[in-house]
Image 1: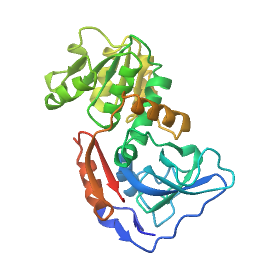
Image 2: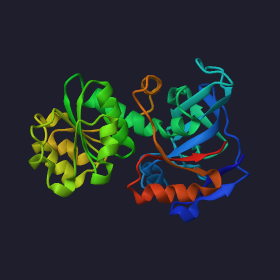
Image 3: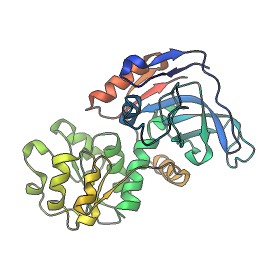
Length: 307
């Protein structure tokens, strides 16, 4: 099959377009998905550079990508809930790294998939899983956000942040976001009641009153200021900086979860969650997609499209 792969860790120069990759095997609990779109996330750069080598076994050649949207080609004998022809999306984080989503086919454990939201295109659906699940699990599980909570989201115009804003609004929260001035209107349109810019000074000095919960997507000095931004430090969550544990908050590492994917699909189909695609690249320009994401400051998601 055709796909992008690399045989060693490194920069974008290790990415190669190949047409000799084997179609992955379909185990008992596995769904073979014909890929239409594969979202690109910062973790893809970390994996490619070897940054997660101590967390996951790696098997070269590595096909990058954990996000996918596509059509079921074949299912294993133990699979329930999916059949050939179904449109699906998912966060295909297996127990090892090797069989990623930037190829014509990906073998996805059924726990990693849900039916694609009808309201989203394949490119939009393929951009949602990792960022959407990260935001959803941080807000609903770690922070237990509910009606009337004042929720502060740092870097709110990024991939995880923009999902978090919309999900928190859907949960009935009063949402506060931080972003550069050029993105303030973008966030207000998404439901942010208050928007601030760190260029104007520490946020703890700008807030009219403390937040009930803080979702940190920046780390460092931003996270260090968080205890002065929130009523209870136990309701600080970070997805980027484990130092949050030392502050009394909680570090979040996203996991595949079919139920949570279904909830994201429901929110999208109910009109409560939209997925702006900043740019879509064809498979043979995957390296450019990686470069764009690595550069940062992208408003919306970057995706590789195969069909």
